[in-house]
Each structure stands twice: as structure tokens, then as C-alpha cells.
Length: 261
Ligand SMILES: N[C@@H](CCC(=O)N[C@@H](CS)C(=O)NCC(=O)O)C(=O)O
Image (cartoon, rainbow, N blue to C red; front, side):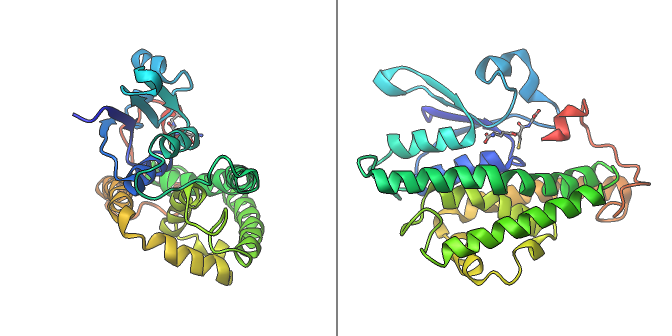
């Protein structure tokens, strides 16, 4: 049995980040399924692992000094794993003794978290989760998110004109942090927010075709296929009501919060 457990739901883009890191490192782990739709991330037992009640959570029985370590937050987990398995698989982070490369890495990581992740995930929640639950889309909010993403991806494109990967010369964690957001935008039919950005497009072609991570991406897509199939069964339409206004779909969510990502 692997000494590393990761708690999560394949629908979670943040679980996908951790799985991409583990795939690049070639590290075995045990996935402990936590269903967002059943609000399992809010049980008293799970809240002891992560008081914020969110997935993913990592539990490393073989943590530093042989002590177990529990960590939440996908980026914190990713950095921990990249450091712990420094000599295994793809390096993923600059050498900590190089302050310039580390500074560039931190800058790129924070920019992704602040300017891309939130609007991209909000678009996906609007287009995939709300629609699958038969809730009306908020077109005003969607248009504002699209405008923000267009502006911010144009900046990413300008950065990628100067270097091959987001944080420097090598593929690494920050490229991974972008990956589920962009997959979700594609999946939501929203890739227009990246239209005409050629440096971004050639970087994305390299990143999305990495063999090491193909199975992780396939698992995330399968989870969304399952969600859409539930929509199809409940609505009899195949894709849910485009406006959401008249859909009768009821997914097995136990509270409004649960599906609020
Ligand atoms: N910043 C966190 C975000 C984690 C997060 O929002 N997870 C979502 C699933 S994608 C969640 O657990 N939502 C359930 C809830 O908020 O109740 C990370 O990077 O790990």
C-alpha cells in the first residue's frame, strides 16, 4: 500500500494538479475518493484533515523526520512533493539555491493563482456545474469573466514570447497549475478567450501532449463525461437546457454549498 494518500474527487481541477505532479514524478499514491456531490468534504472527519472543507488533501505517512504530514492546498502540496521527490522524474522547480529562478517561479505561480485560476474556474462552474444542475447561467457575470480572461491570457502570451515555459526554460509546476483551468475552458466551449494568442497556443500544444500525464487528463475528462451523462439522463436532452431556466435536473447534491466548488 502506498504511503501517500490523496483525498479528492476527479471533478476537482485542484486534485488534477496534484495528480499531474505525481505522474511527472512517477510516484504511487492511494486516491481516497471524497464526493463533492455528497458533501463528503464537510464531514467532521474530513474537517479534521482540512478545516477549510476542501479537496484535495494529501496525507504522507512517511513525512519529514519520519512523521506523518497532512497538507491541503494543491499548490502547497505540489511544492512539497516536488521538493520531497527532487531527484525523481521531472524536476518541476528551480533549484532553491538560485534566487533569480526561484523569484521568477514565485512570480509566475502567484500570477496564475491571482489572475487566471479564479476567473477560469468561475467560468467552468457557470458552464458545467450550474448547467448540469439546471440552474440559470449568469450571462452578465460570464461576459465579465471572459473579458478578464482575454486580457490576462494576452499577458501570458506576451510572457511566453520571451521564454518556452511559464516560469522559465523548463516545464514545471506552474505549467501544471495552468493545465486543468485551460482544459476546463476548452471543455466549457470557452477557448475563444485564448484565440489569436500564438505563443500561448504553441506552449499549450506542448503541455497538453505530455505522455506522462495523459492518463490524468483522461480521468478528469471521464469525471466530466459522467456528470454530463447524468445531465442527459435527467433532462433527456444530452446537454442540459442551455439557459438552465427550465431544466428539471436534480443531481444528488445535499446542499447548495457542495456544488459551489
Ligand atoms: N485553493 C484550493 C482550492 C480547493 C477547492 O476549491 N476545492 C474544491 C473542489 S474543486 C472544493 O473542495 N469545494 C468544496 C467546497 O468548497 O465545499 C486548492 O488549490 O487546493
